Length: 206
Image (tube, rainbow, N blue to C red; front, side):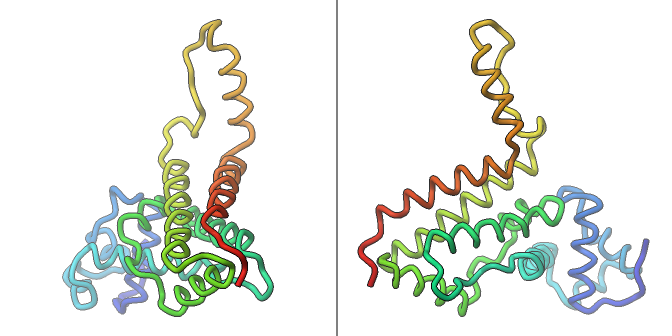
């Protein structure tokens, strides 16, 4: 249903997210966004130079709305923060249709400066060298985006499949049990293993 004729940046971004939820990223177009706003497509160019710019703003808005756990808490240990931050990012991407693809393709290429300083300083204080601190965040964010992307795009519900044969019986049983555990459990298992592995890059607390 078209909205009232309002074409400020905020309205365009809100309409973009609404159209994304309705149509998915592949069928999202400037024409559909303009139609939802009840305006002609050229009206969007007063605020955004092209579709990529609109998608970048939409990705940033999704993260601003839903990725709410970006900063460490007082006296929090570093594994707990990395895990909490990753779950927050995943929730944000799952909050909208094709959210992981949107963030991967059009998300902000640079983190907000204040958050970045606080995050890196936090890991440095817990024994990570500066480059290793940044790489830890890169590793966790890429795992989170990749896992969420697979979850949102899997055609078979993320089930692991094998040929139905006597030789595969045990694997089929295990695959079924893993599938029943669900994507949240699968994500936590991989994330916990990744964070434990990052401990090898850490020196003594400073």
